Length: 302
Image (cartoon, rainbow, N blue to C red; front, side, top):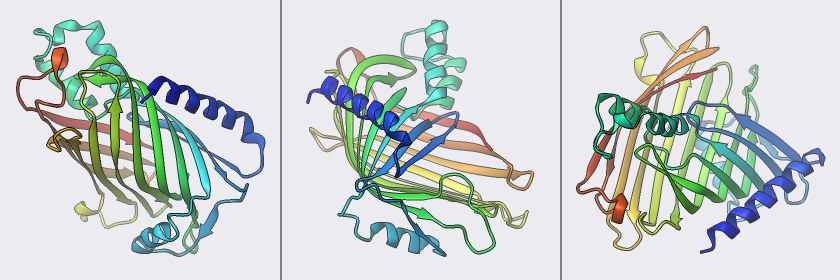
């Protein structure tokens, strides 16, 4: 697979879409977050507007997105960056003493790893082809931000890989089938993602993998104060080696949210664990045994 060619094609398409933003039928979105920030452009293949659906419960949302999912009618370009994982790379580069043996970490190194783990690339360019829906606000409420659902095929490419806060030159490509979406009003925030696909690396010491993942996150801004379990999110992903079909990596992260000031500010703490098999890397990048990394992910949402 020619990764450099894929990257240059996506970059050209992304720049073209930027110049086309003034055209009818283009929808612009952005998201700022300490772990994953992005900017995107969505356009109907026939210059059509995004369809709006109303008064849907959560299960009905999934049914509507799946309906006619094999008939793509929108294209989306996205550029994303992962700020805190990039900061973790910079901290290790500037303070090599955090990893005294090159691989083993002291306390400070473990803390940096715990707060930045779970992201294998510093940035990506993505092309999505599929269906898009826009969710109208429930009666008497207003939506906030991007209230859309997506289902289709996603191709992402990049030029670097992150391993234990080290930046490695690696032209990679990931192809996946994905369902994702977000609804947000003054009363509730709800987001979800279901995906499966394959990831390919040009670096000869990084294994190619298949992947299955599910994520769901919910915040109720108007719940009872003693209802602790409502504001919970979870993220699980299983990676499997393409050559042997053995598990390569498992990630489980649970998020707890604390809405403040009537939902104007939300504090989040994520806790979890990442298991990585010894065969995920080999050669000079190899690990001698299975590895567990505990995840601690503080964040603030506005």
